[in-house]
Length: 434
Ligand SMILES: Cc1ncc(COP(=O)(O)O)c(C=O)c1O
Picture 1 (cartoon, rainbow, N blue to C red):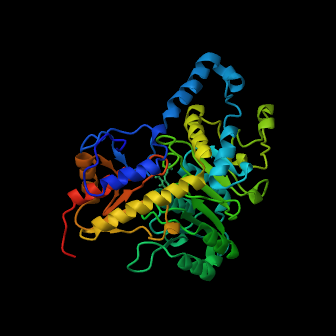
Picture 2 (cartoon, rainbow, N blue to C red):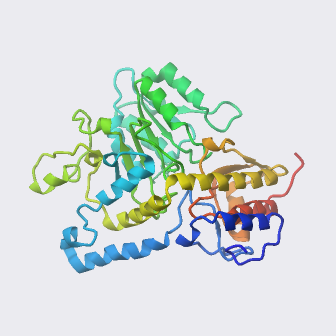
Picture 3 (tube, rainbow, N blue to C red):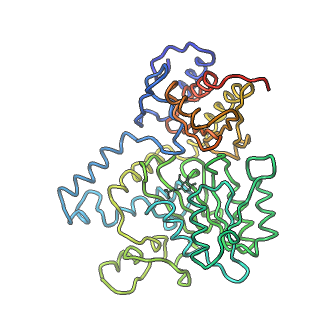
């Protein structure tokens, strides 16, 4: 019996129900939206790569922080059960474990694009012939706008300063060897490589260590946008010698819409007084903060990149989520992600073969996370997504013009959710002669 309470009846459904019984995940820890259409009470939620679901624990934890404000007023900075002054420090160690960093290398603050700008203030320093920023052509638009505006900020023409790496003709994803070959040939003109760890559109997991190593050999700084990688794949940022990275917490990290974001700066950059940085009172070492001195004395940790005092009510959901990741562990989640995603891939292959649907995500499991992207060749991806939503209770998302993204998230997605995706696609997209 599935968690939906519906008797398995249709081809393949019994298998999905059986797999859920043997590999159940942690769905009970989350709120599921109602289906609002189709045969099942709960939505099949495959959009956790866009906005993760709400952990059941979040509400109570958030209310406890809110109550502390009511009870303590300003004294909550020190007196609250989770005092506000050092609150952000409680997120540091779990965030570091999540991305494979030392505790002093991660901090939770601001939002993703803001953090990318703050990091580029330090790490994009065009000089001489080394002026270019390398991104992927299918970078999320916010990253593209950010790097173009950084180039303009330095008085450069963004059309010349920003290099957009494209896949080979007829291919959808970048090959690592093409990226590293580019860096070997032209790296001396590159000031910064800023790529998505997992591409938002195709779901491709880049070879972060290989590209980072190639960038460093070429003498360029290498930063990563890990919006779609954090909480999705196992990362080892410190050991991979990544210069910096940033990620949001509202996708796989389930910390709520617009949630606070994470930052990594490798320890070899800490305490470097030659690095420019935008500062505020949270850039100075905590021990000096209330000396009210006119000149900051930043700590030799990533905390030096903080600017303002953190929003406590926004930190609570990130803390709750990170505790969940700590208790389950990324390696176990990745294992379940491989099983779920492989299962969805098999079902999609059966459906796609007779329909104008093509999986564009890499087929090798090591080259992808939880997301499978499907190109729809016979109409609007948005219209298809709406029909899946309203006729079948399947929540996925579209990226215009023609891509639909499905993310079976190992914390809460089920095999039955995956089965519902394939079943809904089969019912919605007519077969064609191929
Ligand atoms: C890869 C990537 N980068 C950047 C962003 C923008 O994030 P924010 O609006 O939180 O700055 C997103 C948002 O989905 C994203 O997917």
